[in-house]
Amino acid sequence: MAATALAEPEQLVGRGWVTRVTLAGLGVWAGFFGPIQVLLAQQAEAVAPGDKEFVFGLVTGLGSAVSVVANPLFGALSDRTTSRFGRRVPWVLGGGVVGAIALLVLAVADSVPVMVLGWCLAQAALNAMYAALTATVPDLVPVRQRGVVGGWVAVSQTLGIVGGVGIATATGGLTTGYVATATAVVVLAVPYLLRSHDVPLPEALRPAWSTAAFLRGFWLSPRAYPDFAWAWLTRFLVNLGNAMGTLLLYFYLDDAVGYSDPETGVFVLTVVYAVFIVASTVVFGIWSDRLRRRKVFVIVAGIVTGAAALVLALLPTWTGALVGAAVLGVGYGVYLSVDFALCTEVLPDAESRAKDLGVINIANALPQVFAPFLGAFLIAQAGGYVTLYAVAAAVCVLGSVLVTRIRSVA
Image (tube, rainbow, N blue to C red; front, side):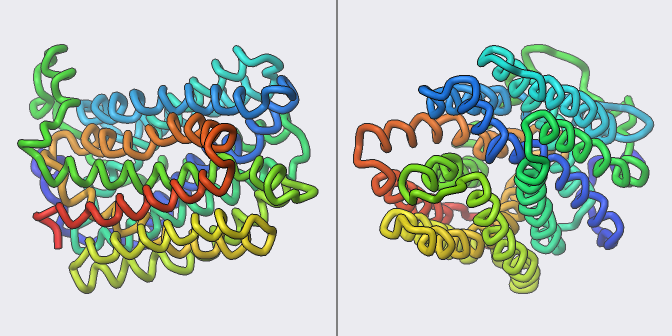
C-alpha cells in the first residue's frame, strides 16, 4: 500500500470509477457555475440595480481570489492526509457539506457583504472538494489513459455548468435556485464517496510538519521546473480569454445583443456550448492518447477558442452568439481534456500531486479574479464588447502558441 499511494499508476481504471468521479465533478461545477452564470448576476441586479456590473465583479472577483489560495492549500493538506478512507475522500466530503451550507447562506443574502461572505465560503469549500477530486487522476490513472479520463473530467465540468445554469433557470427564484444547487453538490458526490478506490497514505510516509517548508512548497521555481511553469502560463492565458468571453455573457446579451430574456439566453447558449464540448472532448482525448501527443491538440484548441471570441466581437446578434457558443464549445472542449492530461505529465513530485495541481488550478481561478474587472473596464472605457472579445481572442491564441515551449511532453 505504501508504494501504491505514491507510485506512478499502471493499471487502467474502469468505467464505474470514471462515472463516479464524473458525477462528483458535475456537482462541484454546478456549485460553481449556477451562481456565477445566473444567480449572482440576478442577485447583484436585485441588491444594487444601479451598480450591478460592479457588484457582480466584486463578489465573483473576491470569491475567485479565495479560490486562488484555497485550491493549492487544501490540495497540499490532502497530500498529507492519513485517513483510513484515503487522502482525498475526507476533503471531498467536507468540501461538499460546507459548500452546500455556503450556498444556503447565499439563498438568504440580501446585501453585498452577505453575498461576499457566502460566495467566498462557497469558493473555499468547493475548491477543497475540487482539489481532492482532481488529484485522483494522477493518483490512480496511468499516463496512457489520461487523455480520455481528462475528457470525462471536462464532460463533468461542462454538464455541471449546464446543470447549474439549468437549475438556476428552471427553479425560477434565487432561494430555490441556491437550495437546489446545494442539494446537487452533496447528492452527486455520494457514489464517489462510497467507492472512491482512494489509497490511504501510511503515517510513516507523511513528511514531518514544518510551517516554513509547507509554505515554501507552494513556490515551484520556473528555472527548476520550466515545463511546469510554461504549462501554468499557457493555462492562465487561455482561461483568461475564456473567462473574459463568458463571465459577462448575461450583460452582453442584455446590452449588446438586446436579447429580451438574457437569463434564458444564457441557458440556451450554455447548452449549445456544452453539446459541442461533449461532442469533442472525449473523442479528442482518446485521439491524443492513441497518438501520444498533447501539444498539437492544445495549440489548435486555443486558436479555435480565439476564433469563437472573434465571432462574438464581430457579430453581436443572437445568431452570432449561437455560432460563437458552438465554436467555443469545440475549441474549449478539446483544450479541457488534452491540456489537463498535459498538466498531469509535468507534475514535479508524486508526494505533492494535489498541491501541484492546485498551483496549476490557480491558472484556472486567477482569471476569474481579473476577467470581470478587466471586462468591465474594456466595455466602459475601451470600445465596448467588440474590444472585450477581440482582446479575449488574442489572449487565447497567445496561450495556445506558447505551449510549444514545453519540452518533456510531445
